[in-house]
Image (cartoon, rainbow, N blue to C red; front, side, top):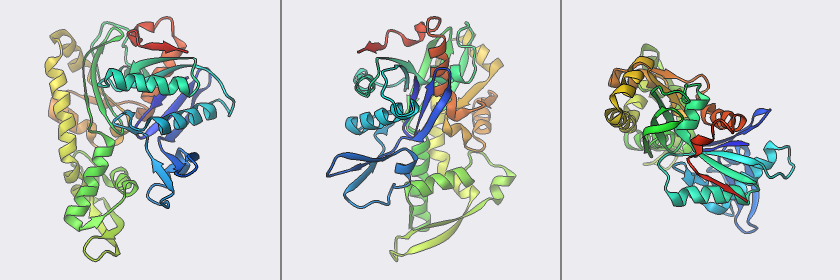
Amino acid sequence: MGIDLGTANTLVFVSGKGIVLQEPSVIAVDRKEKATLAVGEDAKKMLGRTPGSVIVSRPLRNGVIADFDTAEMMLKHFMQRANGGRAINPRIVVGIPSGVTGVEQQALMNAALRAGAREVHVIDEPLAAAIGAGLPVTEPIGNMIVDIGGGTTEIAVLSYQGTVESESVRVAGDELNDAIAQYMKKIHNMAIGERTAEEIKIRIGSAYPSRDDDESIMEVRGLHLLSGLPRTVTIKGPEIRESLSEPLSIIIDAIRRTLERTPPELAADIVDRGIMLAGGGALLTGLNTLISHETGIITHVADEPLNCVVLGTGKVLENFSKMERVFAGRSQHQ
């Protein structure tokens, strides 16, 4: 089983079957009974809409486990569902952010073992994403990947099954949602929830000016802070682009820093081949144009940006003996 245990979504790949599960990384637990009420999409629908006795949480923050017990419950549920409800003890390959500490990595491996895995191997997310996006990482050629997830943006220069330079910044999809929520509060005196902010980002959010973007508008419902009553306001695309500029500039700066540290031979390869964007953040309209504009290097969006990491873990599973070098000794067995 290959697992992309993300801050926003969890995807599971099973050898021979492909991607069998794609669900939000959300779990709803009964506070008194400590029982799981819903996981994934069903739990996400409950966000911000439950009584005090029910806790709806996202057990991962910034790509790492924030709440160990609920993460384990969620992982166990997803693993069983991916296998049609039967209990199993599979070999697992999990993608993790390249910037995690040893303790964070150990917590993730322990959670997977306790959820029923026979053996756990971890692979850096940018490397998994590059393999999933079809980049020739097994050859001595410089490849650059920018994987923008929910909690972290992973930037890496890869060559010959290994990472040459990498940087992980804890600014990604969630930060973009926060920026929109803060903007609505500051400019429109309106409080909106996490789901509404995400919907605004998907529908009219953009990173670079375009004609379509200037004409896009959306009606948003929320709570007016001065009157305390529900209110509807109309917002325009350019306002949202403005609100996203700060978190996006942090990502651009990290890409620049990584390029500055890259050895000249590999940098020349990247100029020829371009930068590859993966992860849900790659779907933000105009982001590839913004990165091209700021770095002077052509930027491509992967074919299935949301699935790159999990497809990469799947390819590693299916070519396990050839690609064992990618784990860099980070494996654990029951």
